[in-house]
Image 1 (cartoon, helix red, strand yellow):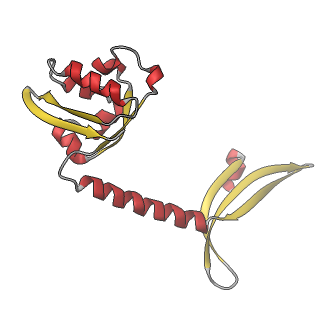
Image 2 (cartoon, helix red, strand yellow; image 1 turned 90 degrees about the vertical axis):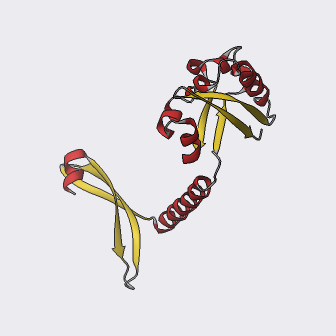
Image 3 (spheres, rainbow, N blue to C red; image 1 turned 45 degrees about the vertical axis):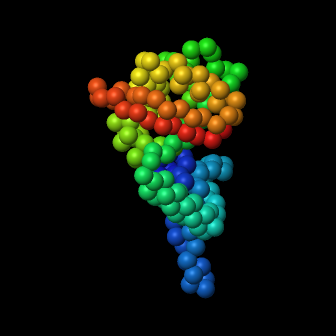
Length: 173
């Protein structure tokens, strides 16, 4: 109530006990209400038990999925590209104009590329900077073709920390 008086509104979650002794998770939404010369606190209480159960189940599924992805010996990634009509000539050649983002990258994928998940999510185009200059055009061509929901397959060289490595990328359209 003190927070509602200070800010005019407060929203919080709590656990209440029903008459039968069972517990229920609730969301309390309180606002100040001026009635004549009186200031009242108007509150609504909503049962959020089902929502909290669904959130917990979703979190458990996410953790299972993450464990499954990170248990793979190969790098796993999911890319979301721009619609093909928004991609310009040369976008696949430059990190600054990368027409995609990573929706998911596994720990192993990051390890193979010598970068962090945060770096890839912040600037997905850094992967384009790793492609060997002699292989970049073919990498770009195959990515461009994959924007039309074709499978993407590429084998070529990357340069990571001054060392050249051969990698095989493959993803479904």
